[in-house]
Image 1: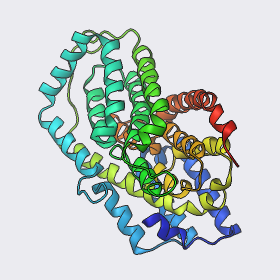
Image 2: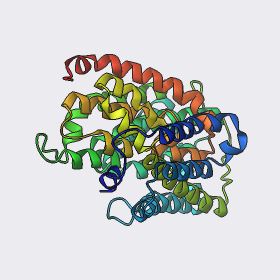
Image 3: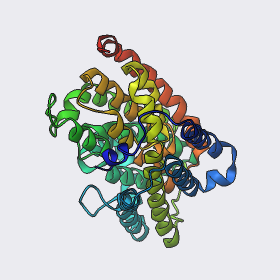
Length: 373
């Protein structure tokens, strides 16, 4: 596994120069996209530059990492189907068959009524993202939102709310997203003997009600006075073929950049994050808003951890991933398709994420109290 290979090259004790350099990169990633418009408009290239810088400062360059960064956007495990192909193929299908697709979506929404349609869409995609994979669910979500005759601000609300649900729901099985695959892999031996349903067993009681609540919230929050027949009388599909291809390439670049950034920042995680108690780890894992949560799972989770530590760490990663565009695959896909900027996403995603984090923290207090040091 790549994670284990790189861990062997990280010094046992913190190196001051590396710590300072990686902290500056983390600060730049969290601040510059909000204050520099050029960076906000070219987020993928910025994250790629930060990822290259992080790996260089950490001294972790090797061919295996380069191959992983190039491969991850086009492969899921050993299966030659990745986010790049899914985004491209779905984009091409919608480009050539957008009229019947938009007509069917509007017809369904009109028959069900706006709030029921919104609730069912978010809830079903949230739960089934663990079955059809979060990539497929995210692309389908983005195209449906694009087809709806909503104003831009309502589409952003829709996308952010739904992506929180998709990010949570995908954690229920190893099919959903890499985080769960790595979780099962790392805990396959003693004492947990984790199998396919292990994530569902330990996280289901938290995730499924959470997806339902987010879906209900979305149904009442998004376009409270929406009238699908009068908001925009005629839908015009304006995305050209060139944009469809460029969007897929931008998503590819973003995923590759996040792989490099996550691996480059591993020394900080190894030296500091994995040594904190469960309740603090829950909050520190808000870094999942800018980092690949699979990378954090690979480094943080191990069989020596208690079940309560594992649960709190994973829940922190899953929830915080919805706060900013780089946090989750659904965020990246939806933002690329709907042309949502980092700032536009954060205005809704950060407050919503904080509320969800606080709510789950209170719900999981018994776990934190019972956690053994």
